[in-house]
Length: 464
Image 1 (tube, one colour):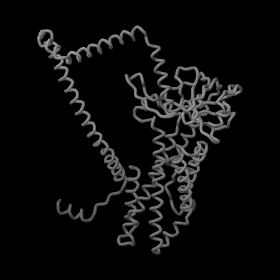
Image 2 (spheres, rainbow, N blue to C red):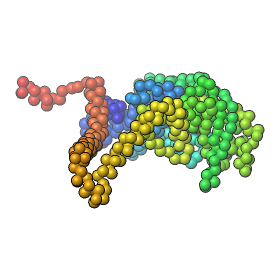
Image 3 (cartoon, rainbow, N blue to C red):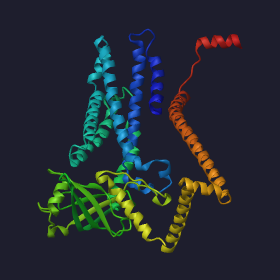
Image 4 (spheres, helix red, strand yellow):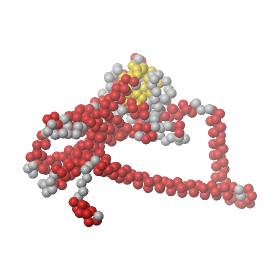
């Protein structure tokens, strides 16, 4: 938003000098180019951010640092998807806006706008739009098409980056007739960093291991799940919630990401892999490990498996919480299984004496609360006997009354704080929008020449 407002405002001031007052379609020529110019730079800014969201090696390294408390690294994939869809949307609507503006002026006899449609920069623009639409459509239907197809087509994005570089190196720029702002200055550094991160991933986090076992789980609807167990490399250190890439050379040379289900202290790595029918990689894995009846193939256990990882961020620091609610469906429960196994491993490492002492103390507190609750209930005879024994109950009643009053006070304070939190959230959601707008205007105003209007000069002359 800051980028869009800044460059749109800069272009708006430039159009004030280029378009004379009273010109044909004056306000259309003043407003449309700034909107297009701001959209172009907003797209370039998103193109600079997208490679950073896919630097898996760097994200995994920073996941355990203080950076993760400031930047939600566990949301990097969601940020990547959001940036991609936002960029495609801006390009799509900016193209429609462009055709409307130039087509309208061309139809009204302005030849300069007609010539724009056949210029070299327009041809590369059509190619950029086409590659983005291909990437957007395959991304939207990624759950319906084979992963291999989606992964291969998604690499068209690098072709889009190359075309974007050529977009501003057109004939006008090469001949010197026009000086364009070059696109490669925006994303060349982040794109280079992504390639370095990807090379480092293959060089430093790649391991060869062996398959040591597998089992199958049959679903009620006929679905199949393969639990793959491989020997854990000695240098492979991971946390609950992370994933790794697998490649089985006996099937093909493709890499596939799967969450790790085993405990971080385990000597083996477990992967829960849902089997899809057809020519999917998972079906080929099933055919290699089992026959039609689901029986093991003895020769399948001498299989080499390659690993790249671990990647992603851990689920949470479970040691800092007394209770954890984990929700997952399907194979989405795999990271939760890893966290659960880690929790069980930590429980077994506890000191038994200390554990049972704290457990007994907790039981005493629970029984004390239950007796206090039972004392407030009972039959009519029990209530009469308590009235007679005033001396025994006189100390308990004020205590119970005080506890009730304290509980009500705490409830009211919690309700008040919750209400204030809701109002605060609503107000805070508006402040960033206002702040971003003011910041963009501040950046724009500070970089532009300011001329005093003649009417203001006359006014100041009379006032001073």
